[in-house]
Image (cartoon, rainbow, N blue to C red; front, side):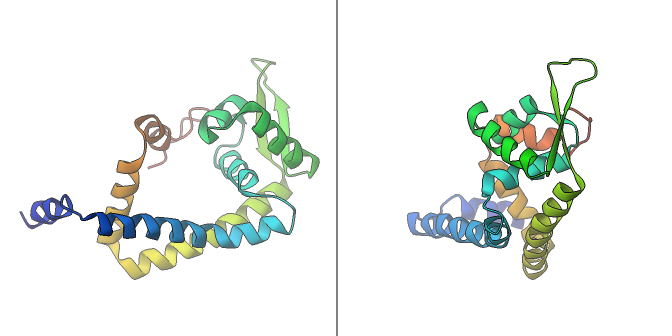
Length: 169
């Protein structure tokens, strides 16, 4: 009953409370991306490169088409990012065995090292924040994030990666 009452109280947030929540998201995102941004800037790269490295590392062998879906960017934009990552020796593109039109993406050893450095920085920040907030807040935070996702993006998040059958939960 107490949880239901707490949820009901949240349904009546003021515009000021919502504005503060929006600003908190902006500043939290800025902090969350600050360390990776510094690492990437040293290489003349940006967040698009980070996102590509993350999802390729998360599902080695993912296709270019799947990465387009996950990132929600244009082919032209993704091609620029992938060209840079391959030229820098961070990503390897392999032709599909069953369908030679497919291009499967894999991180090289250098790519895995960079992705690990970027992710380690973010994991440390999240770990510290989660510890400070406590388990109930962590669960509530995840529920809020999932509730803000568009349904098709929530499906991508919940479904993991189709290319290897893994679930993200």
